[in-house]
Each structure stands twice: as structure tokens, then as C-alpha cells.
Image 1 (tube, one colour):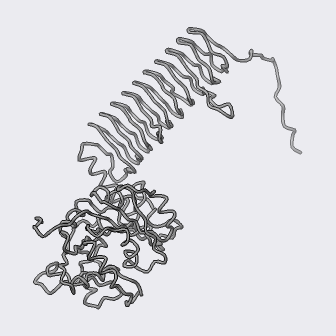
Image 2 (image 1 turned 90 degrees about the vertical axis):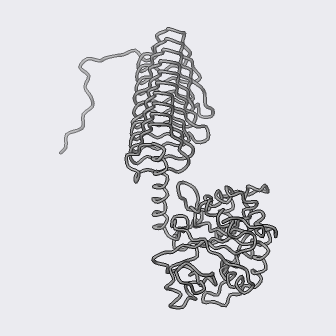
Image 3 (image 1 turned 30 degrees about the horizontal axis):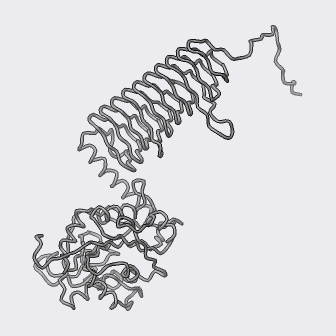
Length: 478
């Protein structure tokens, strides 16, 4: 819609309804804090509000208010949410009355729901444009089963979806004819702030539920001669709300499929897009292959030609070009991050923890754990080993069953292993200790002192054998 000289929407302020208990979730967690794609439902809505350039984002809290406010944080800058408490909860109109004092008079107010997480920014921009600073704009959708939703009542017209909007009638107050209407209100509106505030003072609770309905402002607008327009969307996901675990699970799968489709459009090969979960951001270069049942969390990037095997969990990590992550590998960089170098191979059943920094062509094999350690190019730890707080040089071979003993009960200490070192199986390197470049540590050694470059170090008890020794035997049963 082209903007006319009379249209002046002004700044945009967003109000997010997040006060409800969500009884059907059957959970002590406030409904809006249940997670979709790894993030709270209401956090998705706050992000969208900020992406459309909202001057203020006001979150109306009630049930579990402290938890919701803590989860979202607070602040005084324009990008941070503000909070308005609704206690008790007496309906959507009552909720908006609590938010109204935080809203300047010179803008357009967009009303969103904290349990409708996938509303699109393009849709909201279009709705704000339709409001234009002088109209009440409603986001609507046609559904086959409208039960439970407010119906859009229009003036008589030749076709459904045409005619001026006259009212929104809630399910419990609707006549039989009105209940047959398939066009419903999504809970999203854009309205000039001054008009909204005036209408809020006229609300009453003379209805079947004894609540203050925000939707009554449609009738007030009609009486006052303010145009009411409807922006009809055909994208059900954008207006899908969450009221039960089943609805949350269905929306999760739809959301994940949408993310999978976007990645495949970029050229990523997913073995089965129905068995893929992204709970953060995933940046992929060309020719990336991802097998089934993989979960990506936080910020993950995959370089060109990376292959990820089945049943992997990868969080907060950078996987460089050509690396292979074998099945059942767990990588979690948390805040420190994890880097896997070009051409490296990880797993199966490996674990990379925060601060793992692997160079090119590094091999980390089955049941190997790496934490806060750097491994230079070509280093290998192929079986049943632990490297914690270690600096490992190039081409090191780290034997099966070997560990760095990095913790003394109070503090962590570092182990340094020089280039071209060979550490035999079942060794314990007690930090702080340095193994000189080119050295060899014999299998079964417990090393407590630093070694010279090129040295063979064997630190174990002398083998003693007793001929014809008999093991203790159980006494015969009666």
C-alpha cells in the first residue's frame, strides 16, 4: 500500500502479551518460556519486534512475572524490553491498560502475543503501513476450524473477506451465524497510540467471560468513524499459537522444516530434513553434508565440504573446510567456543569441550575428550584418552588410555607436549609438566617431571613375576 500524504505512522512501539498461565501446558514454567528452536517463545517475539525497529518493546507479564522478566532481562536503552505487570489477569484489554502508561502518544502501537513466536517482520511492516497513523489494522487469517478464536465481522459484501470490518466477536459471545465465519483475528494489530489510549478508557467487562477485551476497540473505532482494515495472511505458521505440549511439538517440527528447507535452498545436503534440529544459527559453505538426527545449538559454522555423521550434537563451534565429524560426536564450545581445523576427523563417540582448538589434519577418535586444549597440525589422539588444559604440538601421537592430570583438587595446571612426541598407552601426565619435542613416553608411565627433547621416559614400577603363583579360590559349597 502506497503511503498517502495523510498517513503518518510515526515511531513504532510494540506491546507483547505474556501474562497468561498456560494451564493446558500442565507445567510450572510460564507458557511463554517454553522453548521453540532452543529459545523461549517470547524471546522470538522480542527479537522480531526489535528487527522492525521498535522504539520501545513492552512485555506485559503476570503469571511467573519474575521468571519471565529475568529470562528476558531489562534495561533503559531502546533495544531492551520494558515490563508492565498485570495482576490479576482480567483480559487482554486489561493487559493493554497496564502497558499504556509506557507508550508515548506519537507512535503506532503493534500488539503481539508472547506465545505466537513465528510472526514475520515483513508482515508486521505491512500491517503498520496499513495503519498509517490513522487506521486500526488487524492481522487476520481464514481457517477451516475457527472454534475458539475471535471472528472478524464485516459489513455485507459480495465475497467473503471483503467489506469493512465492523467488529471482532469472541467465541463465547458469538451467535450461531457468527461462529460460522472462517476469518479470525490473529491477536496482532497496529493502531495509533492516541486512539488506542482513548478506547482503553471505554472498555468494560460486560461479556460472557467477565473480562476486558482488547478486541472491543474495533467497535469503538467503527463508532468513532476510524477506518478498520484487515491484512489477511495465508501463512498459518506466522499466527500459530502455543497452548499445549502437542501444539508446541507440532510448531517445533514445522519451524525446523522451514529452517531445513532454507539450508537446502543454499545447497546444504540434509539426509532427511524431517530429522534435523537447529536451535541457534548455522552458517554453511558449499557442499556441506549432514546426516540424520543432528542437533545444532548456539552459533555453528561449517566450512566447505564438511561432513557431519548421524546423531551428532554440535554447539558454538567452527568446523573448517573438509573436516569430517563421525557419528555420535558431541561438540559444545559454550562461551569459549571450539575450532576444528581443516581436514580434521573427529569421532565417532568423541567429545570436544569449551576451548578445544584443533589444527589442520588432527585426528580425535572414539571416546576421546578434549577440553581447553590446543592441538597443532597432524596431532592424533585416536582412542580412549583425555586431554585437558594441554598444549599439544604438531604430529604428536597420543596413546590409548592416556590422560593429562590437570587438576590438583584446587587449581588447574597445564601440560605442554612438544612437536613429534609419542605418548604410549595408559600414561598419566601430571601437570604442570612439559614433554620435550621428539620425546617418547613409554606405555603405562606416570610422568611428574618435565622431560628433555628427544628423551625416552619410562616411569613405572619394575615388573616382577612369581612362578607357579596360585590365585585365591572360593571355598567349595556344601
